[in-house]
Image (cartoon, rainbow over all chains, first blue to last red; front, side):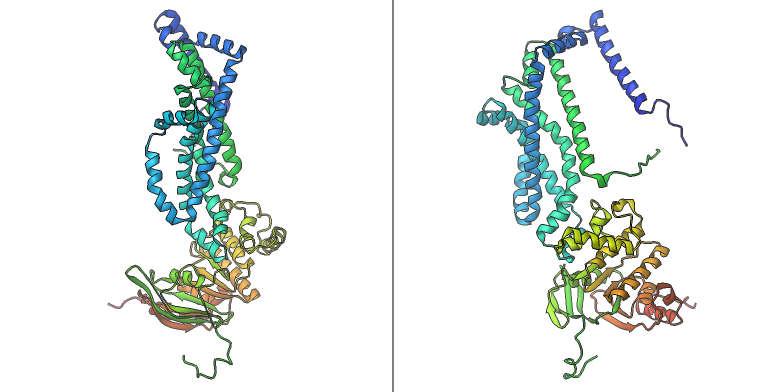
Length: 266
Length: 265
């Protein structure tokens, strides 16, 4: 058996990750100070830190983060929920499903970001338009995934339910929904990102607040440190949401977990 | 066998009768007018060459497919299929992976609207009887193939179906597990007086378990022969050691055109 590397532990990996980040930031700062890199174009870690301290102490960073989080989470939840429900519902009628399928494909083939200007026109420059944009991005992904997953439910399991005397509603509740659930939950990971994309792009186009607003206005003023602050905050949000989704997945699909984890040595 | 016209009223009608059942898929005729009967409490095996539509027959009996022609008589009355009255078991255990063993066992009771508490108690009884006590909260993926198929058998028996339809239920298991489960099945069939239809490609299993064997022809499928199996010993191992066993085995092999003797040069 191959011996595991001594650093291949949770602690060891975290130490390596931290070292890499510190090296990168130190190199960046050093490069700026030595004059190899232009702070004007890339900013500098110390400058970003200063920006962070300022925006945290005056509270504006929390406010912008809250706005963007609110828009993307509401958009994600509403879009994913509605899309999944419609997608699952299409299982009920092959006729309806086959009729609307090309329309869904057509709608999906437009880059949804291109709808942003009309959505702003329709829903105004406030939070609603960003939420609407996030919904339009997430709903279609959820719809297609849920419909696909419902279609792929094992026909033998459905037959079994029928031989036990189940009606269509029972087949739907006892086989279709649970077997589509892993597919639906897998889209949560993608859609959490799309929710953020919707919120930030909406803010780019027209807004008074939010991290998208922060990044957009700062970059037009060549204030690179503030741009980085916005980007790093978005990264932190995305990272946090991803872990929440991961937790939701593990809690809601206990039957998918390996009781005995097996590592395949390649 | 034609009965005199006056007699049928005196005899109970067969539990299940297939009369001229025909089915085609697209341009391919699969079943070409099937006739056979299954008496109450009978154990009938259906054997035939692969692709002869054994599973199609099952799906018609279970009410999952509609025949193009012919009638299905249940206790003498024509029916569309036996939805909700059959216990169906396949080679795949068809356990719902997101349900625990207990959840899987109560599935049929749940569909019939039994109160959850009552269903649970009944399931726990069955699990204890079949040696699965302590596994009620396990997920199917944690069980061995033999245990999973045992859970499937309990799920089938617990709803007390009129007829058990078994579609090669043990063919994916190793020989030891299979003999064991055949024994469990035979014991349950005898205890609850079940009527069983077993589809198998395994002549050995057909002879060991059943009282009657229906041999099907190549597609388009008809009934080629009916054999009554008269082996006193009903246990899977005992039946296989019965002096008559090998005679039936060879007779059925030759019906299926399987060479059991070395061809002389």
